[in-house]
Image (cartoon, rainbow, N blue to C red; front, side, top):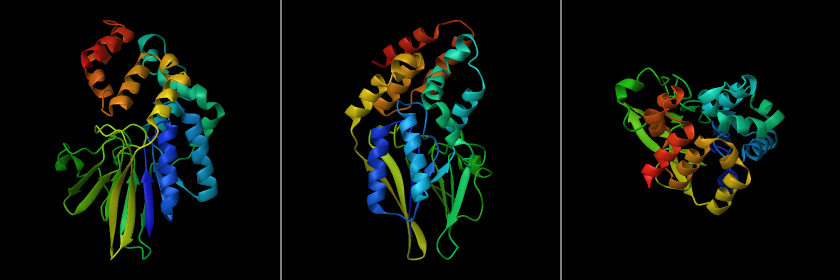
Length: 278
């Protein structure tokens, strides 16, 4: 039995194209999207409508991530005034691009489980943990913090969210973070996804890293209007993609509250942060 699991495409169509083609050549029995197909990137509409076609014609299955949740929230909640509204401007841009296609996200589950053909070795797939789809599993998180966040009785737990591929264990339970298709944060710009095979009585897995057309992806960031129209944080998101490293969390710790309090403008806060990187 062969299973492919991918996540965190985040509107990067060239990366998704390469991964989908690789999956289809491998021809697994089951394919799962583990959240964050849309937002934080330039081509959410194309990625969503293509995945919906794969869902209908090839039975590919979705799991919702935090960005699916946030896009649907922004669709139904008007942007607040001032700095709070500017902080979500890139997502409002995505909502506008998606238009009526936002409804394709309705009903995505927050987890999926499947087993080997005999129904013994169970795998649980979710974007984060049982605590929620914003709760990532990292190498630094102590085992004690994971005890109540993972189901019992599993052969394998699969997560995503952090954009960093990872294999670790909690007691006898293997945990696999499959990384990101569209915007890895581990210094490797290549797309990442997981292949699973059940053979010789247990699950085996491999993280695939694939080069894709990053020139086309960079053009998409600008030609789509995402960088120019998505507000100052869109520039920060682009730099995360370009450098394959996490920046937003560091920016949030340093500047978010100051921006919300009016002590510094959002554009200057982003400018200062990016200048310090150079």
